[in-house]
Each structure stands twice: as structure tokens, then as C-alpha cells.
Image (cartoon, rainbow, N blue to C red; front, side):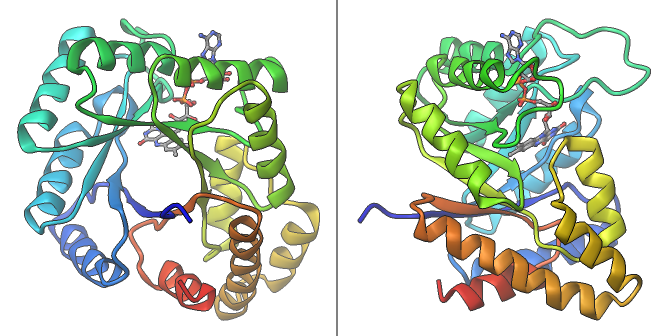
Length: 276
Ligand SMILES: Cc1cc2nc3c(=O)[nH]c(=O)nc-3n(C[C@H](O)[C@H](O)[C@H](O)COP(=O)(O)OP(=O)(O)OC[C@H]3O[C@@H](n4cnc5c(N)ncnc54)[C@H](O)[C@@H]3O)c2cc1C
């Protein structure tokens, strides 16, 4: 059986206290021996220094670190500098994204779509980096059609991406259907499901509206009904997300990537329940 890939995602903290908390989170999650920790990157370069600093810390602690890198609003020169910095630091894996143009930022920059970033990375750094790209089992909100989105996803793989991490979702069927459609087009790379533990309904609803991830009606209604009872939301959320992960792994998913929001607890509990 091929080795399954497990990984955890963080955002770069804004304060020294946040950085300290994240270091503690990492220490806990490291005991699970994940393949890598990834760190998000604010589109338009808004978190460039903090992403780099967090990556530096993860590397210094001896773990595999994978920076996210988004190209929207950027230039070839700027991306080249970041790639060289990461290569010199010994980074081997990058999550390559388009990102979303921050409001108020006028210029789209020199890259329009993530496939262009992947091509640029291959041209500049050959096979040095393992390139991850984003996938959307429920389709990207700006996609003209489902088919179009899948073809655009394939474009990133054809440009040289090695594997993909999905947007989170709560319906296992949408993942399996998406993977099937990709396989029919000859896409063979691992497509690892992104997993969002459910901690607070209001926060989840806000994220989902922004990124186009669907909260099924039965789930939304149940979570709404639990209101501010955070303990009940978390208990129910753990059952739902553990069930989802079980289905995904049983159906052949090549691993799991957890959106931790810098908390260890929920991901660790799911991990424990899965018996990983
Ligand atoms: C695992 C994961 C990690 C993420 N991390 C971050 C992060 O750290 N920072 C951040 O800002 N955002 C992050 N995002 C969000 C992501 O940046 C947004 O979803 C963004 O809107 C799209 O980025 P992309 O790389 O998927 O873009 P693309 O693959 O470029 O796709 C964007 C849209 O354009 C369409 N499209 C793509 N190529 C073409 C083409 N050649 N011609 C016409 N249409 C095309 C696609 O169908 C899609 O609708 C992440 C998302 C995921 C799933």
C-alpha cells in the first residue's frame, strides 16, 4: 500500500503571543509525524514576511515546511526572489496558488492564473520543488462551469504540479466525483482532501460563503440549532468530520490535509478517532 500523506496548515500569526501559541500547536501536532506543515500566504504579498518567518521557524524545529505562494498582484522578479529564498533555505515543497486580488489592489500583476505560476516555477527551478496546487471538488466560485474548472485544474497539472490539496467540503461524494472526472481526463496525481474541523458555526459559515464551500442544509440547520452552545457544536462537528474522513480514506483518498486555524485540539481528536 502506498504511504498516505497527512499534513497540517497554519496561517502566519500576527503577534508574538500568536507565534508562541502556534509553536505550542506545532509541538503537539508534530507528535503525529505529519508529512509537512504548510503556511498560508496573503494574496498580494500581505503576509510575505510573516509567512517566511513562520516557515523559517518550522524548518529550524526540524520539520518539513511548505510555504503557500500566491501570484496574483505579483511580478516575475518578486516570485523569483521568493523561490530563490525558499530554495536556499532548503524548502522542497510549495503550495502554488493564484490567490484573490485584495480589494484596493489595482493591478493583477504578471500572472493571471495559477497554471502560469506553476510553469514559471518549473522554468526557474526545474524539479527542485514538489509543487502542490489547489483543487475544488465543489468547483471554484469563479469557474464558468464544472467542466471548465476541471480542465483548468488539469492545466495546472500539465504545467508540472505534482499533487493537489482540495478546498474543504462536507460531502464525500463531491470529492469522489471530482477525482473520477480528473482520472478520466488522464490526471493521475494524488488529490488530497482538505479537512476543516468544525469549531464555531459563525466562523465556518463566513469562510464557506467566501470560498464557495458548501455546508449541506442538514449540517447548517443542525449547527444553527445548536446556537452558542460551543461544546455541543464541537462534539457534533467532531462526529461529522470524523465520519467524513473515514469515508474518504475508505474510498481511497491518498491522505488528509487539515486546516487547523492554528489549533491542535480538533485535528488531534479526529486523528485519534480515526486510529491513524
Ligand atoms: C489548499 C488551498 C490552499 C490555499 N491557500 C491560500 C493561501 O495561502 N493564500 C491565499 O490567498 N489563498 C489561498 N487559497 C485560496 C485560493 O487562492 C483561491 O481559491 C483563489 O481564488 C484561486 O486560487 P487557485 O490557485 O485555485 O487559482 P486558479 O487555479 O488560477 O483558478 C482560479 C479560477 O480561474 C479559473 N482558471 C484557472 N486557469 C484558467 C485559465 N488558464 N483560463 C481561464 N480560467 C482559468 C479557474 O477555473 C478558477 O475559477 C487556498 C486554496 C486552497 C484550496
